[in-house]
Length: 190
Image 1 (tube, rainbow, N blue to C red):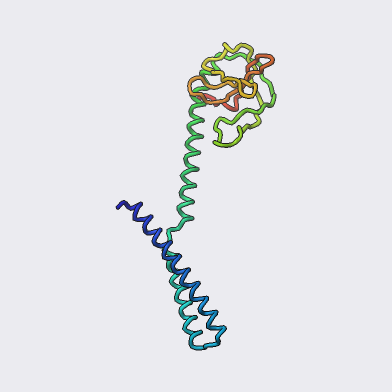
Image 2: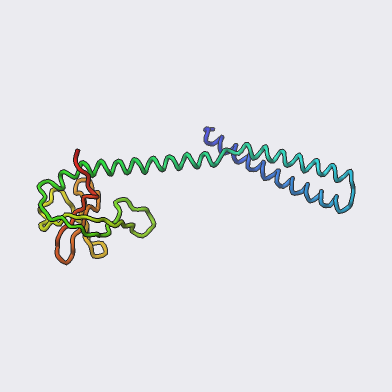
């Protein structure tokens, strides 16, 4: 039997033991109430001792249950670490791709603001977006080195890195056919 299986068996038996003690405690309390109603002093003392014993046993069984909070915190730390690794990976990809994307790029700077979808989306929720300010306006889509274009999403085509599919790094204005790249989604090449 593996240690994980033994841990589950141990936890299950501890949980069953706790439930058994709760049932016994409940029964003892009912009998104690009955004894109080009858007014029998010696029976009352015996029932109180029984309840006290069951409470002590129950407390001990609870102490034997693995600390769920510690396991939960460890899992949160692991998830947080994975998110940090994903962010570092994205930053590395952006830094490796920036030079290729902007090499020889000629354009005009605009301080416009636009909402772009986040590069990493949570599953099962509506598309998350962030407000981005500052874009390079590029007239000719062939001016780019290594930029991909998505299919239209809600009437907007987005620009992505053609090597790694990171993005969106910008968008195409459907009316003017101008391309807009934001440096906030790109990193300077070291």
